[in-house]
Amino acid sequence: MRIGILGAGNMADALGTQWTRSGHDVMVSGRTPAKARALAERIGPTARTGTWADVAEFGEVVLVAVHAPAVAEVLSSAGAESGAFRDKVLIDCTNVVAFDRFTLDTPDGSSSMAERITELAPGAHVVKAFNACHESVWRLTPPVFDGRPLVVPLCGDNPDAVATVRSLVTDIGCEPADGGSLERAALLEATTAFMIGLWSKGVDAQAMVPPHEFGDET
Ligand SMILES: NC(=O)c1ccc[n+]([C@@H]2O[C@H](COP(=O)([O-])OP(=O)(O)OC[C@H]3O[C@@H](n4cnc5c(N)ncnc54)[C@H](OP(=O)(O)O)[C@@H]3O)[C@@H](O)[C@H]2O)c1
Image (cartoon, rainbow, N blue to C red; front, side):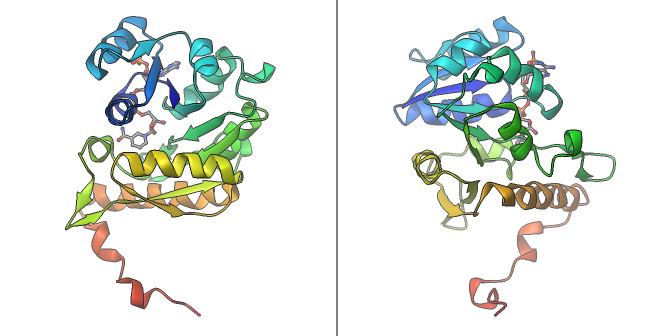
């Protein structure tokens, strides 16, 4: 699969490296071209770089991996308003955490970054994924803890797009989980902010979740 990555930082590095190892073709783009070139070299000989617009054109799937405040400008530079992402799968891994109080700082009255990205990229099939774990987790080969593969929740409205992202989750040795519609991305973003707040206080947030047999509320 051809995967474009908007961003040349930690998430681009972690996931771009994993997907290249799985046989996908990756193109990265960054604000600082030299950094993007260095990342592509690190990822491997098949990885390439381009402008934001090149990445939008190249990718059947495009990962948004820039800081939340930069998302609107980057998508616009990639040609989002003119339909550059129409019918493409756009993976949103962004978090918009207000780190002084570990709440969400979602822009322009949107309920989530995923919703905002849907507005900014008309026609794109947005799937929220990969936002809930630190980049160091996405570098593990594979991300398995206590013998259990990491479960990666996905929220999206287009079944084909969700199926595509499910396969990219499986490719890195994780287990995809159906997180429901894109509307529910707001819950995933809030849960992540909450967890980051707990981790920052030294709480073992993993221990907060009981085994599955205790999870039925009905
Ligand atoms: N790091 C994590 O553990 C983690 C985990 C889950 C989700 N996320 C989310 O993933 C996204 C990327 O995080 P990251 O850790 O990869 O960040 P990062 O390492 O800081 O990289 C961010 C990328 O965005 C670019 N960028 C920053 N400001 C920009 C602007 N105003 N215009 C254009 N490009 C800009 C950076 O360019 P320069 O290098 O030139 O500054 C860099 O290419 C964020 O939304 C973050 O919340 C991160």
